[in-house]
Length: 169
Image (cartoon, rainbow, N blue to C red; front, side):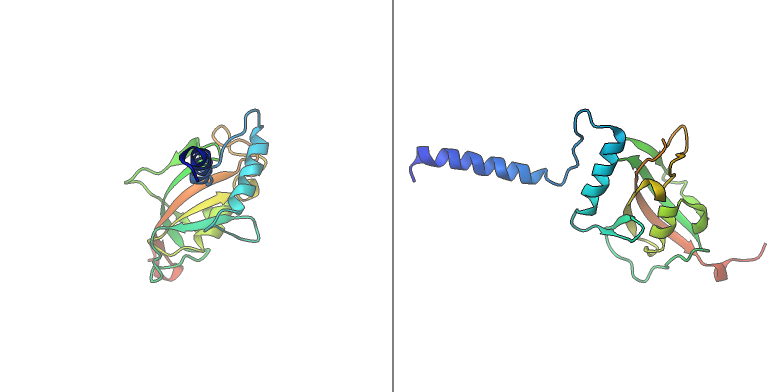
């Protein structure tokens, strides 16, 4: 192949590889409604490598190392978590401060967290994609969370206190 004939081939190969490099990024579509974007995001997320999904529609993946010896929460456990939450468009809506994690019984969190926390071991971090019915549903949580919002979370499970480990007041 001559050098001149090779150049278009090289250009096409570079363009194809460049397209692969950003193939995992979710891209908004001009003029798309927020609801349509969320539906498309949920579908896109369900097909990404490394992600799992439950029967309820929770999408999840562990990030970082597994900690199989860490405590696993039960529905009545009290957990300590650090988290970041954002919408499918990337806009953040909540983050714990480094020295102020959330501490609460698993049952006090939204449905998607309740389900997802039970998959984790203390010391692990997970990413969750929650469809609206596992988040705040059709009512939302105004003014921060609009109705029918799909939500994304990065959660680190810092500690688990089982019911049998609690001390009486």
